Every structure is written in structure tokens, then in C-alpha cells.
Length: 338
Ligand SMILES: [Zn+2]
Image (tube, rainbow, N blue to C red; front, top):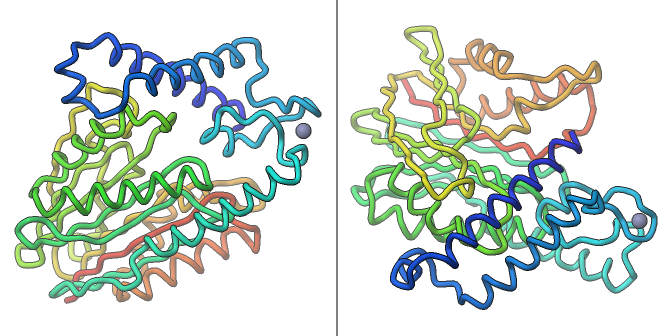
């Protein structure tokens, strides 16, 4: 697992280097179009990335310079300039990190919706629990131009201040763009264009963004590499997985997203989640998995949104047999009343 994250960091850095180099080589008029970064900052950041890649090359990236132990990959993913492990941080550094974590915890709590919106003929409920002090899971509710309801769930790798800041800028971006748009895919495309050159963003974000029309029961959605949400159809007694329609945000400049459509009926459930749900382990090291999730929802299709949330919570707890969840866990249920 640690190697995977390490390779992802290295891959992310290499892609970012290429992006920044292309950006620096692009024509001045394109630059104004693409982003507003100051060119000197881009050069400086390119240098930092190159240093990190050199360290990856000679296998010193993510190695504590004092004890030669491994730096927590989650921390490295967001701060690839980290040079020492947590134990070998100086007292002021550790204090600063703690303050940052505390601050981002406050920011994150403030960002998550405090109340769920009223949707005619539907119920909405949500649950979120960060595994570490600050999580990288994010969900929100908003409105599109025509007044239809917007739902978003996203998974931001890493923890701490960088994840928190990214989350707050993502929320602002979506809330700014949605009232001007009817199209989930258009919003994702604009978000990718916005973040691809964000210099502090070395890794990628998965986002599922949907628009629900309570009068026609139409759900249109676009998904940038997010774990497929599931629709449990009550009458048809089957499920639809809402698979990605675009790559994750921040991976590639060439980014095309499709908007897809699914019709909901009375009694159906739409369930959104982050990978902390399907990738939860039990003591025998089996994963909860998407099949178990679909079965659990199918068996409880008659419940209201709040009870669905409670049932999945209890199902995960029972599955883990008291073990702490390793990843952030977030889920949202939309239930069409009968
Ligand atoms: Zn150390």
C-alpha cells in the first residue's frame, strides 16, 4: 500500500512537471487564458518538483533525514518537501503542524452542510467521519441555474491544511459555477482547467457531481473518477452503478467529461460514498466491497434516508468488528418517497 502511494506521488510529480513545462512553453496569450499564476512562481515550483523527483530517483524521497525511517505517505502526498518523520520534527515544527491541523479541522467542519436542503418528494441524509484529525472527504448541496438540486461528493487525498484548503476552494468553485450552469460535466471541465495548474496541487481529486430534478425524477451526473454511486431501484429490484464519465481532476490537461442520465422512481435510493466505505476492512482483512453495500441497501430499500444512513453505519461497524476505520468515511443517501 505504501509503495502504491509512493508511486502515485512520483507519477503525480512527473505529470505536474510536464504540465508546468508545457505551460511555460505556451504562448503568452494562451497563458492568460489558462491561468493567472505569476511565471516566476511557476519556475520556483518547477524547481521544487524537480528536486523531489531527483530524491525519488535516488530513493531518498519520503525518508526521514534523521532516523531514515519512512515519512507518513499521507503527509508526503500533500507535502512532498517533508524531510523528517513526525517523531523527528522539532518542537516548534510539531506545534505548528498541530495548530495547522486544529485550524483545518475548524475550517472543514464549517464547510460541511449543517442542514440538508428540503427537496419535494425526496429525503436527503448524510454522514461523515474523518479517520485522522482532518479528513479529505467532502460533500455539499447546492442549486443549478434552473433551481434544480445539486449534490456533490469528492475525495481529496491527504490530510491537514492542504487538503482543507483545497476543499474550501473546491466548494467555492462549485458554488460559484453551478448557478451559471445546467451541466455537471461542464462544471467538472472548468474545475479541471482551474486546478491543473494549481501549483500546490500534486495529486488528484475524484468528484461525483449530480443534478436532480424533483419534478421529472431525472438525475443527470458527471463523475471524475469517483467510486460509482449506486441507485437501488425498488420496483425493478435491481441496481445501477453510476460509473465515472471523466478522469480524476488534476491528472490531465486533455479532459473530456460526459453527462449521463438516470431516471429515478418512487421508492428508489441514490447512495453516494467515498472509498472509506467499500475499502473498509474486517479483522480477516476482507474488504466491505460494493456487492455487500448493494445487498445491504437492497435489503433496506423501504427505509427513509436517515435510517438508511444509520443502517450503513451499523453495517460497517459490525463488519469491522470494532476495528477503527482506516480511511475517511462519508456517505449521502437520497431517497424518493413513495
Ligand atoms: Zn525520523
